[in-house]
Image (cartoon, rainbow, N blue to C red):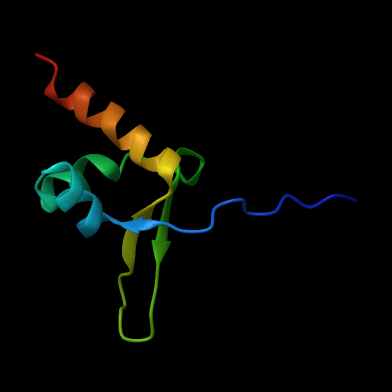
Length: 74
């Protein structure tokens, strides 16, 4: 039996991605909600955070860029 191991060593929170790409974090949240874990998005939870924080793998950031382009198309 083989088990797939997570190959990502780090993720970036949506707040950090928003700053890095110069987009509004609330707008990114609206469009990124369409993404699935297969698209490189995960939710990170801490002890004092009930709702969690959306975070992206490098592949997830690429997928997010694709979504941004789709949502900006006329």
